[in-house]
Amino acid sequence: MMGLRLSEKILCVVAVVAAVNVVALCIAYALYPGYIDTGEPNIVALAWRLLDGNSVYHPIDDATRITNLYGPYLYLIHALVFSVFGASVAIGKAPGLIALIIALVIMAVSQRDRGWASVSFAVSGFAAIVVLNLPASIWDRPETFMLMSVALGVWLNNRSALDQRWLRAAVFGVLIGFVIGQKVFAAIYFLPFGFLMLYQDGIIACIVTVVIAFSVAALPFMTPLFEFKYLVDLIQLMADKPNSWDGLKKVMRYAAIYVVPASIFIAFGWQSMSRNERTEVSILSAGVVLAMALVLYPAQKPGAGMYYLLPFAPIAMDLAGRGLCAMRTNHKLAIAASLAVAVLMNVVSVPVEKRFVRSLNWQMASAVAEEIAQISEDFKGQKIEIGIGSSNDSYRRTYQRTRLVFAGHPYSLDTSIIIDTTAWGIELSQATLNMIETCQTDIWLIPVGERPYAWYGYYGKDTYGQPFRDSFTRAFQKTESRTYFDIYRCRAPR
Image 1 (tube, rainbow, N blue to C red):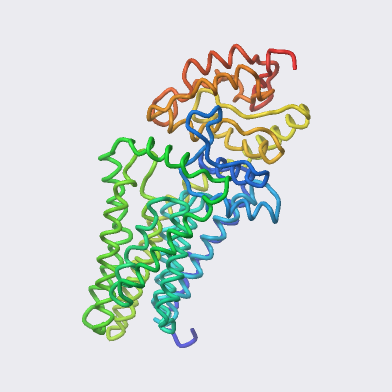
Image 2: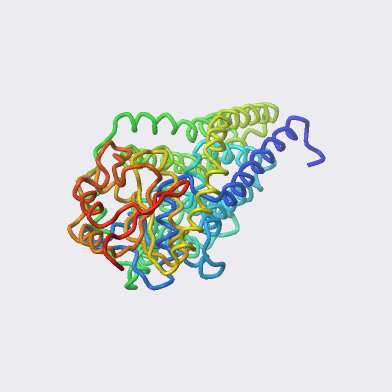
């Protein structure tokens, strides 16, 4: 570090600042008493219930509506952490945040043999992509774990000392199985590595990787906690989501963040690369382009988005690092170009970070948490859940429903799931209406001053429907109001 030129030192400072910024965001979000995304509470609630032997996947016509499309490993990771440290909002966020920080560290380690410039640019570019994808890059959904897995793939791919192809095939198989066990299409992110393995190690090694991957992905379904049929049924129903041309255009624009920096440095460094390096770069680049093209289809669907490209960040930065390393014959240009691109990427990410920070309403989240705790104490011995009202703003208050689940209350309906299922024609079942009318839950908390379950959701569809509201009105009545929630209790004597 002492022998670096001023421009190199500035590039290192940019990388350190960008990395520290990501870590600071992780710490801040871990301490934030609420959630930023509607899907986060569902994951941690299902994971916590796993510890009591409750299954994750339920039939689509079940009385409950809490099943998500994510694979078993997402829940198992959280359940493992809960089993060690107990349940809280912060502990529920910890696995994803730790995975993100690990990915950042691996990104740096994977480039260390290429010099300070490659390490610094890879870290600063990676950090910028993380910020540009907020909040998806920081929430406790599959993205951070897939990001970490692909970063491990980059490190494994760059380990020149690891010349045992069977060990490499086995480790890639485990990584691929792990990500498939979170999102069914996630093997696509490893397609560039697969092409390179086919070239370097042959088809037998690829077959070994595929067999191990499917074995790892299938393992959780051997237990009664994960019923494969129910997950497949829901995936088939949700696969009919319409396509979105506007969504496709937006995702394609954001793809430039991954493609352009790598392309710049590969172009500058191409002539200085060895023949073997050119071959590897060509294979990896072709794999990235094909994999991105395949991911565009699910990414443009309603409810998806640009963050589906996030797991490509480690490969994109690795390709940029390879090109930058090859530019050593024109060192001044390499440092100037890498510094300019690194600064530009991080400057562009600043408005996204500002929006994210402003969205964290600490005072409101703390007050809502306190009120939920107080209501739970006031009605000790009764089963309490949180429902929705009629507005977007109030819906965010309901994200803290996990606090009741952690305290042992029921978990029967999750609006984050029902928004999607109702929008695509999967209505609530008669069993659900019967569950409401027989007061299986004693008390429902509804955002104060709002009509229960009248919200139309993000897709402009009636989320719960009039039959559900009629059943709720027949079974429950408002008995009192607090600051953030109205308390609806069962009309029948309990």
